Image 1 (tube, rainbow, N blue to C red):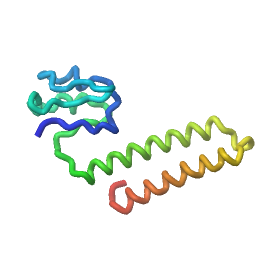
Image 2 (cartoon, helix red, strand yellow; image 1 turned 90 degrees about the horizontal axis):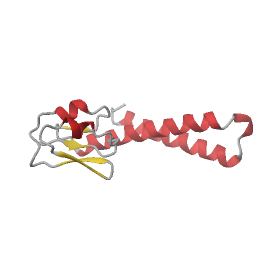
Image 3 (cartoon, rainbow, N blue to C red; image 1 turned 180 degrees about the vertical axis):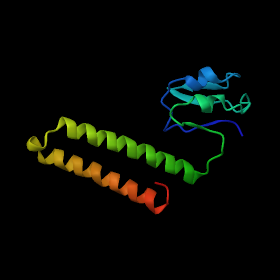
Amino acid sequence: MPAYILEKLCRGCQRCVRACPREAIKMVAHVAIVEPAQCIECEECMESCMHGAITFRGEDQAGKARQELKQRLMELQTELTDLRARWPAHSLKPSMIIQLEDLEEEIREIRERLANEGMS
């Protein structure tokens, strides 16, 4: 099975492109794309990827969904931390409070889904 790029995790760093001895990986709109006919399954690209965006294990849909949930959770936590740092608690407006609460709720929901599926 040729390499598979998990697009949500790919950051467009091009390390995999440089690592591939067969030039089977190309960049399209800042995302790596594998040409399956050229892939020799050497796993050089997977070893070079710092973001865990490449697999050879033929992940099923549940595995892909789990990865996407974990990625979304990281993004939300980063956004929440950033907003809390920029918005001092004493100067919050109602719209800001609602935005923070919405982020916190989405984080809780994702954590529950991961925990219920035994994937946290």
